[in-house]
Length: 360
Ligand code: DP6
Image (cartoon, rainbow, N blue to C red; front, top):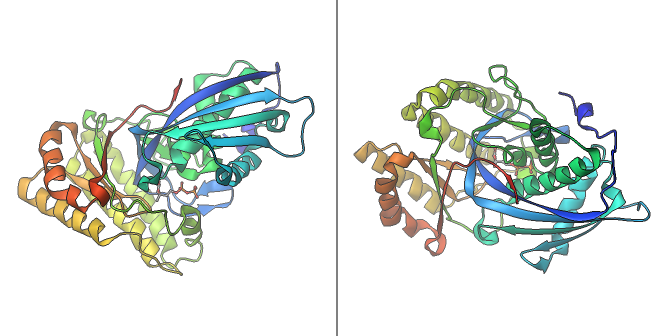
């Protein structure tokens, strides 16, 4: 598909006033997106597990105006409070998607949003937030344009979400979701995320992700800035080649459920992501001492017990502890007894693989 195919050309009817509510989940990348080209095109393909419990719930209230305005007309409320500081990000999003959704300036909007996880947890809400908003915009578009298949709806929602925040395009459908064209993955595209089309072992259907909140502070380096540092990065090409290769290596692993290989590939991805940050100009470190303590404890525990517990990281200090549901009891005990002590105020969130966004 090309970008042109996402432009809404025909209006069937006009929707006067109403509202739509969507809940969209967060996701955790197994092969990381780090580095992008113009228009939110990823420098390499990535794949993620869609999560189940960490979600954003967004309501878009719309009212048709008598006169089309020159600018976007909207207010934002987060957890019941008016949030003017959230407006620039949403305005940028509206600007980027306007050519695909030309009706936006005909409406007055109120965006009301809340997260199921604490906003100050250091968990990025941009993926779930942008996905939920994109889905609301798509519901309005469907109202205006008439029939659209579920597949088309999800594709365009993911396409729009990507323009808000790259990883958000992986937060529309169920798990795993691939974003970025890869020759070995049918239907994969740089423009939107797609549900992994290959065979998936049942161990990955309810894989667990316990998020250890090591540092709940605001991110010191935004993802957007980090992505930009890949432009003149000395290891950029090697990194993009590695990500492509790791995604290919995951194909037989997804089918066989070989957790030893799964761990080898995904832990390496997490460390490569942080290695890129440490070797860019300017360089930076997002891990904290407790991040490393946790990683070492996981390695020791895995060595001692043989249980397939592993970690992955986002662009921050928090640690995502990944493990199969069948070992949940032993691994949760280990987390509570040995890892929670490294979390800020002992906070952690139990999550697992989920099935994607839902209209409420
Ligand atoms: C480290 O999607 O937050 O989580 O496109 O600039 O909004 P923007 O970046 P964003 O980057 C996420 C990077 C990551 C890896 C990943 O999720 O693949």
